[in-house]
Amino acid sequence: MDKQFIVVVCGPTASGKTALSVELAKRLSGEIISADSMQIYKGMDIATAKPTAQEKQGIPHYLMDFLDPHDSFSVADYVKMAHERITDIASRGKLPIVVGGTGLYISSLIDNLSFEETESDYEYRDELRLLAQEKGNGYLLRMLREIDPDTAAKLHENNLNRIIRALEVYKTTGKTMSEQQRLSKLSPSPYEPCMIQLDYDRETLYDRINRRVDIMLAEGLIDEARQFMKQSDYPTAAQAIGYKELMPYLKGESELEPCVERLKQETRKYAKRQLTWFRRDDRIHYIKADGGKNFSQIVDEAVSYVGFVRNKSK
Image 1 (tube, rainbow, N blue to C red):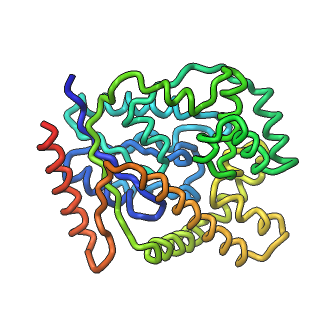
Image 2 (image 1 turned 30 degrees about the vertical axis):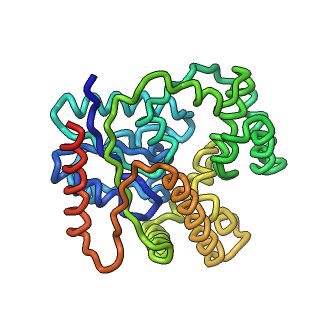
């Protein structure tokens, strides 16, 4: 079976994935599938840096802004929906372009991981959430480390939903999530991925992140956070970077400036974790994005590389 050629634009937050992917879509007749675990949620626009209609430039974007923050959404859900979108885009003669910084979404999709159907145990989830409130997210991560060190090593304590899901999977199936993933590579991937990441020196990337946070604040991040913090039943929003760091200010417990500095620091830490994740994948082609290059040159280089990989795969 011939593999479907797809482009994957991956990398850390604030690295220019959106701008590059839109230009690639315009130049290569493509459509975009988001691979961002927070941009799927409605209303969480500024904190997750969802592209605006102006930034999309008329290019269709899928798997973005479609889910209520109350609702659960698994990696298996993402993979299923992304497969469907890729098939649809390709059937219309367009190029599927997967774009995002959620490494687990991307690797699960392009490596064709299949997921065992597991029952949901909502009562156990509630117990774990209560435990996290009482003892902290780190306590749950240590619980997970005891039974599934491989999965625990990939997760940060802020990623409470995935920690809870991994514990729930073990409770309902008797198998760890990492064991299920090892067993899940049942068939070869149907995709021929051309993976691109924009590469910056660390200082430049961190400066881009700091400026991104300043722009988000100017665009109304505080008001957006205030709306979600009014809702105690939005656990997903509560853990999103951009909301929880502003909570002390919104509660009147802190001045704004230290909360903003904390937000910048946490975003930089998140970018570092993303860089660590993607560095393990030797299929990624890095395009140097600083050092005097203009954006047009970067796009030209990306288009040229996509053409090279596409021709080689035929």
